[in-house]
Length: 558
Image (cartoon, rainbow, N blue to C red):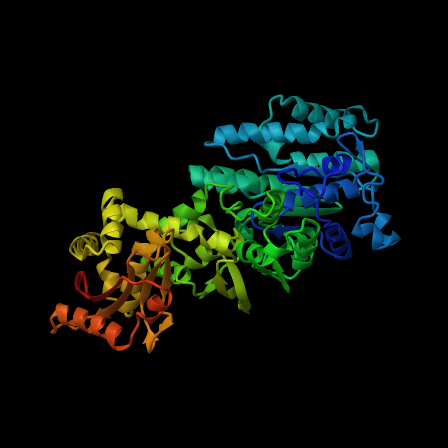
């Protein structure tokens, strides 16, 4: 049973008899929360937001793009929930608009694209042009927007408000407003350098549609990031936001364990269930651990082939830029994550783009809500959340080495970085030490190496530098071996190659740095840190002690 991949139109899926996971109980939960006038649901990209919103559109509207919706939900879970819910099927006019394609390189092109998008949205309701229940000037507004004739900013900004007003007059019933990927134009504008113009336009457009609009029955809005209310939804008081830190709607976006087990059984792939879980599960949302739906669908359709599907669907530009500009403290925390350990941080759930370069709380929120980290624990602290963060699964974890390597490529240059890794793994420690010393003197922050946790800084520094070896070595940090915990171990996939165990020490001011390196080496030998390498069958083992002080380093080996 091939699962649909990349098709966001619920009606086409039903019409063509395509297979999809039944998420129609999302509609039930939404209808049960009828006190909520406007719901903003935040999920990572490709987590089924557009498909679920399209499903909701087809449930509420009697017809979508000329396709009758009656009977579409027969046999689905919402139909089994009872007549109380099915009485709502096909009952409402619906405005559906997706901003996911508004990501041009400049404001003028994005503005033109928004006019085209609004024209397409109005065309879905072009029957209003002949409605006897509308006034002449209202029909003229509809015609102007459909034909894209002299659309001044005020008309564009009030277009959703005007459309809801006309639909109410024509149908005698308030429409639902469904907005998909509301934050895409804003994120794109931030990356391309026209954020101020776009945030102003979107604030006016969404504000007029949501702020005290008496013509809307309810609104459902989806996005990846929670844009700060004061930046975008100022004055909108009837808004409730549900992020991945919220228990509401937890199981409706992404696949649950039960859903994945059922699909794997049908496809005779249960033998791969553990590996599939390790690669694609792990998003903690409410009481559920959720699978990435895009990756699961691709994996199933390729007969269980395990690879990075989700992380390769985007250039990750915002993530990479933000990580590259992060301060050393944040980078050290990322290196802790790289070492397989979670971090505890405060999260500001609101994304304020202007703060991404200065505010670590905003940065961690970006990574969490974009799906690159998940919260193992989540506790409210005043208006913020204290979260224990870790990569959700192997697919996402494999992204971090590439990004972190890019930091050090900048400091060393591609050629030097290549020789740095090659000299280490081939035992050319003179070259290794020379390049490491040069990097410390030219690139390491003096402030950080003089900080309160210098050993942690050096540890994180070396972990980041050697992450480029993750394709051919298993890199471990602070694990037990022999009679203690080593700092770093490199276990080669090819057991004929050299295995390495590295220990760090920070030298005192009045002590020769070479003695510090010798002490680190002696600790490896005395505590038999090489035991794990021996058990793995590695015959050639290189022990390295590194002594650091400020921007100086010494090395001892055996």
